[in-house]
Length: 310
Image (cartoon, rainbow, N blue to C red; front, side, top):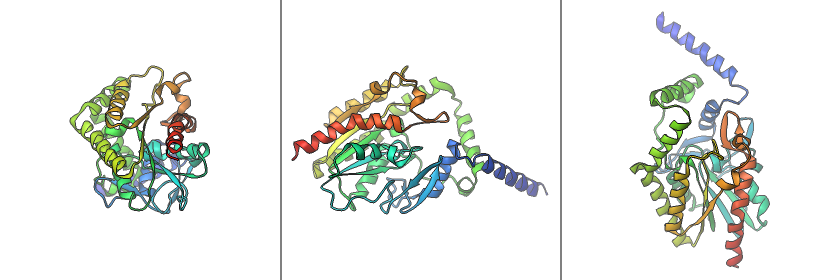
């Protein structure tokens, strides 16, 4: 009887949570739905997860379409003279923004029609996983310019193991697990965020992740003669009183060491309230306005490459 009561209570709680989050404004649940509706385990362990080809979904009240290659957006242009591939995590993917307002969407508007642009961004992955996906994808499609969006979570060690059947099928369990992980960390507030990222970026594992990604990019550059652009994406909570410069210093240093073009956007985002660049007050992912600034900062290097190689 006690077990049956627990099951009934859990079912009621599940129903209440689903109704309460039906407006698609709960970040945790929308990320859970993203994983459930649009993602699958990758055949390549180095990648972790891929998008399911030819799927669509509404996430945070935004329409998302995945093409036949597992990329957000339309099918690549056949026989395009040139192609730009945007590589990264949920920021490259354009989480929470319409397709036209993603970095890809803005670059399409800024670049000549002869240059196709594809979005290789997938949420919840580190930079090494993102680059590994491009290596797999190169067997199906080529690009002469790679824009690598190096975001704060670039050096995160991302588990590719399943969270379990219950978490994968229950919004209540997903929220419960997230709250438990946050509480068990014992760290809260703005300073905890700074300390956490400092630890992550300075750790042997974090340094190994980003070095592996840059090593792979160098091999791609040498083999394909690709134009590699490192687009530095600053931590979005507060651009004006910024406390994460250690990330920018590391990214710039590595870009210089490997001979990649480096694009910084932090100074361009200072001034207005940082919240004006967020998807919502509950979600600090960069919105279309912020991504437009990043596109404007990057497009010059893209055009210069093609002009110098005519």
